[in-house]
Length: 437
Image 1: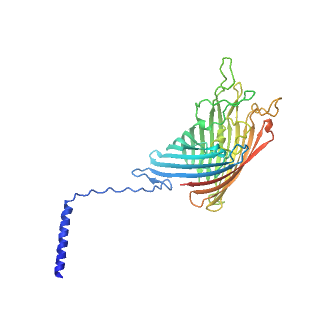
Image 2: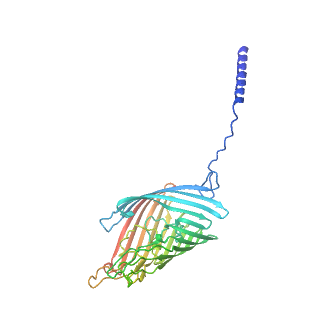
Image 3: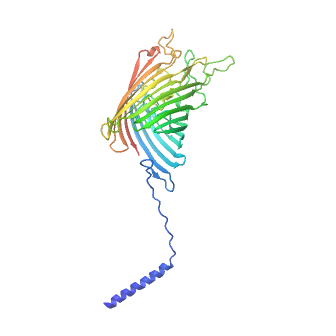
């Protein structure tokens, strides 16, 4: 037994000596660089993380939205049902600097639309586009973002069209002055092409009509004063919009040159208020937005398309009309829209909403007919329209919305003989499935 133990101990000592000698012959191992793990950035809210090796924070997000829309049609050739699928991916990078926040935001969207309810009569189309892309540095904002005419904090919950400027994204260059305690003011130069309404050739026996838009040589000037607090937000806003026409078709001056209409400057003024209503229920809120426009109808219809009664206004929606002498007649109008949202449970909420719009032109445009054709529509109809609707949205898990919405619209057209005293109406239904992440 002692002999066995001695052999084992001797063998172990020999192996240790050999191992030590071999280890001494190996090259020294270099120190492994420490792994830098992604760290949570809580400064700007949930979802942000530090970009490794920098002091900038990033959030990656996106959305998938599927809309199934029914719109009552007045023409058998039009599609009643429409389908839309939209995908979104976005990045938001923020860095604190000595001059204030530096933010870079990019949002790409790809959508496929099918059917008249989504502007594709009897066909479908897919298109990728940049929904938003902007840089904010201190008070400076440059790129494509929600127009500063609109209040992005309004607690709107509708899916379909209401007659107000519903936060469209436009290209702009703006500066915001922050006064503290929730008050701010912004001056913004915005792309007026995105606010153009009508301005297509429109002829009558009296050569009354529109002229194609000439090139833009002045952007829209937009300004606002706003307040944002725990109770909600309020904003007053104004805009100046340039209208320039080309040579009026069918006109001729003594020198052989067609008549060129004068450059017009329309304007728009408006205001909005959003109010939190926790006394009714957690998350409850109401909002209202009103605006008056003169030669700048895009500040009522901006961001809207495919309305129930679109195409039934008795004429073109035009910022400006011209007669054969180059005299102008601006389109004027006003609208008011609002809504209320109530949360029945933490996952189920209902919204009711509506809008009223009144669009009118001068008497020179509202020609009602002639002795030969007393019922013929020669001019352009003034019209009034109201919309009312509601929806119910179920959010079984965070970021997922399953909604059902119905909107009814009614339009009254005046000042044109064949439309006098008549009205048209329509109903829209929509199912929406949306996941935000």
